[in-house]
Length: 391
Image (cartoon, rainbow, N blue to C red):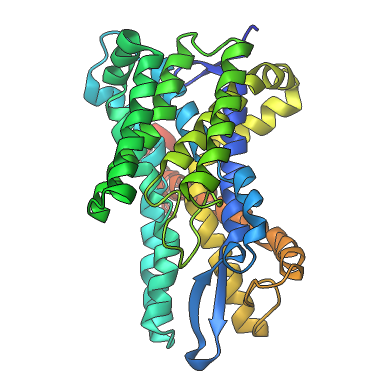
């Protein structure tokens, strides 16, 4: 299947892969907005985080649709491998790849440092402020892991060239071994965090191989999808892994913190599905409107990822101050009606995220305009000649 190869920062972009990234972002954002509830406790008006998955475990299949982290790392490996340039220095390549990811971070600190101080000054309990900060910072773990994998892309590509799919099998075996040590042999709990590397390196590694032409056959995609899904279906009832593919507050074991073998198997199924969707997405992204939408989503990808929790928090706090406790926003998610009520609030969350994105995009333009506009009373032209002045 020929690719839609459009010019981009890293040579030529595969728009179908960009579409997968956009869908993965949508899944993460909707997942967080649907399964993260900020509940107000009557004594002291404290805020704490809970989830409908805690009170209604039958909703676990929702997490199977909206937990798309493996797709993030798959397309990340694909894009990182495609961006390799012969002779380019390691540090230059790393700066080039990570510049877009680091750009939105200062604004996050600029906004939240005074907001946290103002909330404390207004009397919000310290535990509630910490809860909000933790929600804002929770997406940042992804950037840390992604930065490490991006830094080692040349080595990962060399490993793929040497080991191929056998390297993926080693990563699966490594995750299984860590889980056995943790759950069966009684190894210290901190040893489980080693799977943060093995579990997320796996889809990144497969993405590197995919960029070089591997996993292109329908047979490979079906094998990954079927094998990963079957393994997940067996691990949950037989090995006792949680059915939810996202963390549930208060649960003894989470499939994501740290990642488990069940999460790895689920990621393999997602990888297979992603490769199978590549052909249909390639045809879809040939339409101008689809290309435009996908390009816009990818330009704003990191801003959406980093700011979606902030949008939810601002709507939640603003509504609480203006109207008091509201159903689907501040109430305990312990009944099916809560889901319908929450869906209505997604519109407000999306509006807040869009408004924040517009302000963030406008800020650099306003700053450039202020810099290039000559002071009153001067006969100067804006732009590169401003420093010289023209009389």
